[in-house]
Length: 281
Image (tube, rainbow, N blue to C red):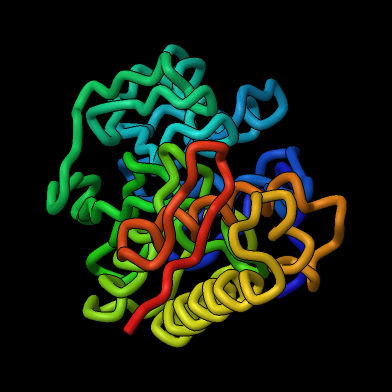
């Protein structure tokens, strides 16, 4: 498939072009993918971060044909580019109706058309159906290009790595349920917010579910060394296979696992902040 080059317009098929923002990193992989969908009329999915270079690359690609700007969610590498593209093109914006207030969001995002589960955007005879997939973000939407059975996954599924689940808005229980939902959909491929196309979508969803449950088991096993234990005591044990430089990020997902266990009656948090694993029958 070749390397992803920021700013390069890559035609994935007759109806989809990918342009990647110049924001590579540990959290974004090769950068945030923006997808242009359609022909005589176009929809742009995830304009990405505020970036002059990325904005100009997108505007060159869409010309005067842009009808819709769709956002999968409002994290700062996905939606802030919306405003400049909207101003330049007059395109209407669409996305989930509300923006979480957890300090990690593009709080200025306000869609012209708020979307909910099952709503459809039509562009040039193609149909993009919104699928609500909370977990990574409570306002996360995937978009299914129905004619191609191609699912634009934003950060619900990334190619080459797992996504961070950051409480309080990130929710591990919801994330796993949203992954399970994908198994029931007729999907031919994933077009992720970071990385290359994934042409075995159901296998990938199952792999991600298994990975998260395996990590959850590591959380449970870590309590055999210390119970109760703090996040910082559990972290190097649960993420012993992860570079220590990524531990501050992994700590968020660890907390999300513990919150899930608490909701299921398998753990509890003490007044001093430490966590205790509860005995189960």
